[in-house]
Image (cartoon, rainbow, N blue to C red; front, side):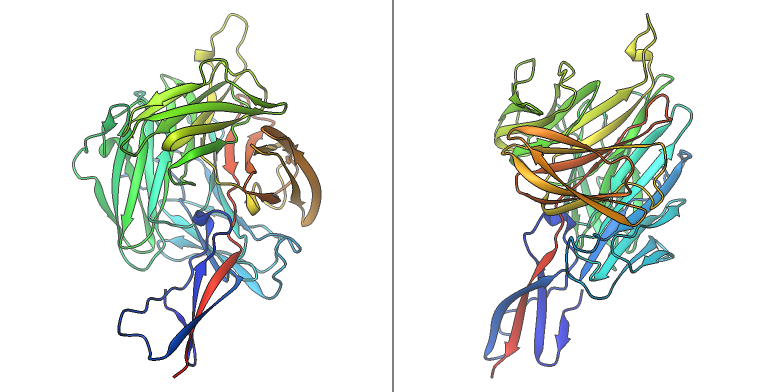
Length: 492
């Protein structure tokens, strides 16, 4: 993007380290090459609210693959800026959505706290932007649902700022399991993506080329099986050159004739030695850990529960070889609500698979029960403000939504929910090494403020009328609200 010029003063905005970097706005930048700066130039730091945020949504996940039928379902994009009083910037602003490709307008809005929404059909993505006073804290979500058949599922995907590198935890080796990689380029230039897959034996060999080019202002859908062989514990690594990309891995699973559901895996963190995943309740849960570096990882698993830290029923320590991935079984955990804290001797990537099954009749087997699944990524902390759009302004009467808050150190936060344009704020305490839940079923948005670096948040979504149950999880990463500005003035 071009720098902003005002007379002889150039202002360069650089996203500050407030909240998660992945939700930072695209901000103008500039570089002074040696010998090209004006003689006598001086620099003075400043800061101010983010003035532009751009978020990419993948669009219908199963559309756009040559020779592969699209799975019928309903796709909706939702967007909102924080209600008045949460950010406090004031002034004019706007939210807009458009399609990629084509730049067809989807919606516009100017009211903080109001939900903007639009359906998406066909092989398109969406770009949601917030400007002015509606840029700080802008959030957007994509909801996909199919209510019948063996492909029935509920998928909730956070729309995120494109970036140069992604680690996507999801998928498996079952015969009727299909993973689709959706890459979105919201920029004006082509972007090249190199895709590699870590598996149980190391980096998987490429099938043909593992490098693709995404045209400007468009998206590209790929089958993971066309890039690398199947593996029981795949972790996908995407590196973009020539620009930034948004990336999601859609995992759809049919077990014989029984639907197991689908979900989008997203990338929220870089490799780290300490990882927190607000999992919630699951009847079958597993962790997936990948070690991208050159040293083996000793990984210790700790449960965060309403009554504090606990060790898992099985051995809480596992060794994962360098350059590989592995699954850690947590199906023996009986806590009704929990989060997972992973401590490793070296940086790791991690995600958790959660499945929710239909009721099993007497004498039946869980293997025959239809289910839905969700992939929960390693989370960044909530920071100053985190939020998500859960539903349209008119909340569906059968929505089931639970906010999960986890804190290794303990914290008190403010939770603001919005329904029909009305915001309600409550204070919530989270015990040290524990988790707390808040019922947010009747709300269209949820915002968590004051959590700092010790709170991790996600919302579990379902439908009261769904039988078998539907499941989706929306992570709430910290939002960037403030940008540093470097003001360069000619003094000579």
